[in-house]
Length: 413
Image (cartoon, rainbow, N blue to C red; front, top):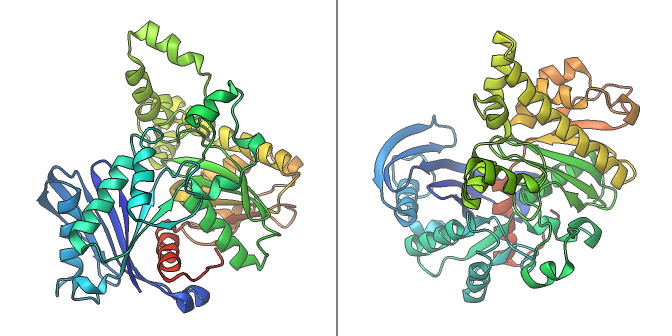
């Protein structure tokens, strides 16, 4: 089945075209036929397109809105010179959408109909920066492909529905949870779920025996405690702002800071919220960049103190969550690194694991240094806890979930 996967942001659309079915999943033969993204929608957009086996191309085009972006993508996919092995719109058989927030209503991936649409609209209050754009993507795909092509919503929050109440309830008046849904939801669930599934494939562990800590470390970052194959705790909370230090997000902080900074700086709540989401994290500490690669280079080449501080705070926060989740689960069999930083930065992995030998965590320096962007283990022989690097693949999981929902066939993910 040819499945178009869409990840729609405020001014961008990322996509992949994946060919998959039950046999392909079982044998790991899913085929990624194309990928790309459209950035800066609303004006002169930058468009990057890549058919598998061909080099990517980048161009610009006037793209007014998400519907126009979807039409552009589909027109390219079906063009004779794209290199993609489809030629008609009818060969795109389903669309899978990354939807950031499913609230308490949506605990698994689901086919989008009018009732689901209304449910997603009702959740806009919980995710005002994300869900409206996800709805725009659904509308754009329906407009471009017609109402007969099934569409499936795959939720970032769904994997964390198994968290116990002790993990998701905040210590605020309980009626705030009852009335408004104020609780920890967690995000990056599609990534953490894929990592746990791939870990089971690589190790032969059963779902019930999967007891691991997964670290999705990128511009957005989160940790997840997985016990019995289920999410039992995660670092992101009511919004993606809570938890680890990120590229531009602060992560955990004392909420009293919001009023204090607003009063001192003469800022509105919205301006403080924007600062915590867009001007904090690695960027805020370093004053230089939100890119970990650039910070590592700045530290190495110039010894920049604030670049080093930003890296150290990032690694320290991850280390604290590893310790907390080992305590919460009474141990773990493995810690798994994923995401752009987790997959491609041996230096950051080494700094996170340094000093955790009392917990049974020891890195093999040579194995760690040699592993960039690939699967493998980086633990030393003496390590009681295995250390894995497993590149995440959220789009593949979305495609597989879409096939499962459309066909009604269960998948072991």
